[in-house]
Image (tube, rainbow, N blue to C red):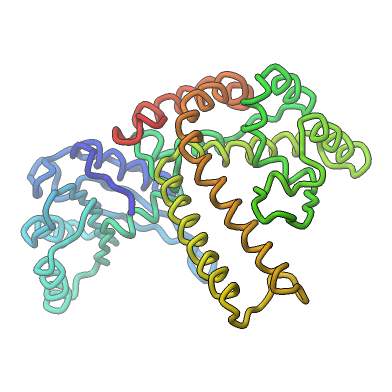
Length: 366
């Protein structure tokens, strides 16, 4: 779920207003009363709006919604929503909605159920608590960017890069990539290489090889450029589409690279898988039955394969610390040399704002 606790009360109301606007509401009015409970100044709701939706028979249905926003540290109580329903009973909207950054208390849920049973109100009563609100917000990353909210699933790098990328030629992209230092460029494109250059991997010999040692034709930048040209000239792939796809692949890698939470989870997976394979090696060495990774392989050949996997995991773990140490430099390099090509000035500003607003405990790695 998305953590909204850093927002002030008025910011949460503004976020709710923007979400409703993105969901198609019209004639929205933010009534700016008090956040804690309802007051006469807001007439029982923080936001009022109209929703025009297509009914099953093709008719346009017009609904008026009264919306109350609750940004409480504790669970929302029954008294906090009673004013909304009192005003709704008098003014008769079609729908009342409580949007909460947290949860309603059990007494509040019970009170709403009793209210519906005893009063049979002529309006619907909807509740959007944190879980549902998070799911709705996740569909609109531009809102998250605007309010400086970022999660692993919505890395600020990807949020910005996915916003209406401008179209540039493949030649233009390579002019920029040519100017980037080779080491940084290779790391940037490591996630894009496999999509363009098919890898051929030989069988391990010593069992101590890392994956890079097993590549028959290690990828490099010139082969990558030649293959892109071949895709365009011989296979009629659109150069604009290819340029867009390459930036998308590289940015996906960048977001993972700069996220220490994902790095830690990756390390945990590596260690867990390596431990499982080492247990398998011990069982095979002890003479137990085994199912070979490569069909028909001998016991020794199977052991070689498993040891090669362990060596690769160890190599990945060794690189992890270097990856995090280099992330700040590479993020800056990418922003300077590539991002500004594919984003307009407003989008670059959004990216930088999102970086500044990234959770404080992660800024050290970014």
